[in-house]
Length: 638
Picture 1 (tube, rainbow, N blue to C red):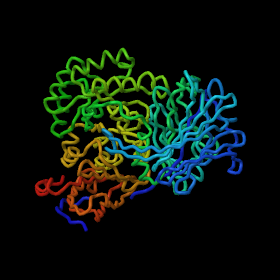
Picture 2: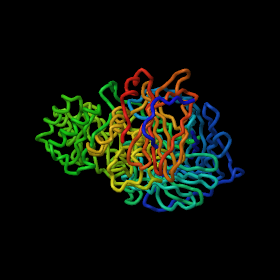
Picture 3: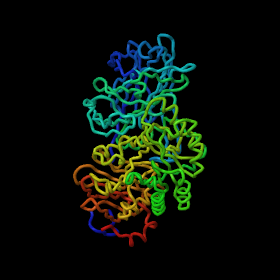
């Protein structure tokens, strides 16, 4: 039962995910031609691996022609139909005529710490099957198949010496049934809108990650382990229920091969499988990625960022304005101020000193070409470091091919890490696990965010289940003064919890926050990085309610699209036999003012809260001794 502590002015679970697997393919823009997918009776051999939890099973089968296909099952239900596997190099094609040589299966268990993100400690227990084949010419070809509690994955190897030119992959992904997709058209900056689209209606090329609901299964497709040795890829519609995975445009359209060391593996193609909670809480992308390269990560600090450019494009060129944002950030306890395009080198050291005296650090925007070569990095980064800059926002790469993967992304993460500088990206590729190796990689845009104005509610309510699953997302939320704005002030405030970014940029003007003291109070408390994340309720495009923990405090954020509705928020994530104080902030009936109520809650309680159309609510849950005085003195707005 809820105990109501204070009466302000009148104011106004968990689902499921399912699988799939993915693939990579293409080159020269020509359509893939797969050998006929075998019926189960046409298989000559099959090999399978189950996750240690016995809930997921991956099966690789071989047709009479020697072609390879992959299927996957979750709790006995097929989540991936016969999906072609294979690679075409300049010398030969590893698709038909493959002869099986050997199978190995190993178990891998790890627990590792994350410097920032949606959880601080990650554990997994996986089983990995390696299948070794030989082509007609005697060349080796290997496939690793990963299974763990939250999904499957696979990657290829072409063992030998030297390098090989990969032209395309004969890889595809077959999702059975009549799946509904939550997808965005492909663009190299990943800034297209997300929409709900049946797979049968999809046509063309689509970005990773892609979410599908097939029967009672949820399936999130993405890739991980993309580095300087390979290129990024994305999805392309093929035949009925088939998705091909194609290389980045430089390779697919311009005909450039991927030059690949034979000692390396291709990126992992992943399918996160389970209920919707499994999807959004998964860190499978990081599990399969290389481990951290840094011995000391204590200098890497996630945090809130005051950002003036969104509300005033000319402001980064004015030292006086930037000092105003520094003062405001210091008052709010925010860790950083970003100085965007237009800054002057003459006054940046002065601003840094001014900020540091107030406990605030400065981040600096740059066009990526200013540090686009190793020589430029070695010139600019030491200079900026000497000014006291904490990190760099690099912008406008707008490329996804091997040349920028190999010549820039890995290099700039390493070079900044060596100087103990943070790095993050706009106009960029999708996060694909690099931040495990280089945790100074704090966040990425790769989303149509608030920088581009007011986007459709469907788009905004799909993002927590797609783009934000695979890595921190710099949406630049909590923009009260956006005009037009299709949602309430409660909705905007809730984005600070629902959207995770390890550098969370609050983009509005100082005045917009200052005239909403309840928002100021909440934004001074809400972290940018979390120890634990739980999905309480979700339906892509309609509702998203998250609970996130930092230390002993919990924060809940809920957003909805559509008409007025009530949300039921359970507190079963709280520890047993512990009373918490819940500070609940939402919109009044106009949608333009914030109101607050206080409650005492325990694990067995549930809170019902009425939301306006396109509304939102936040809850800060603390132990009573932390807020006992404030409950009596703080008053709601209005």
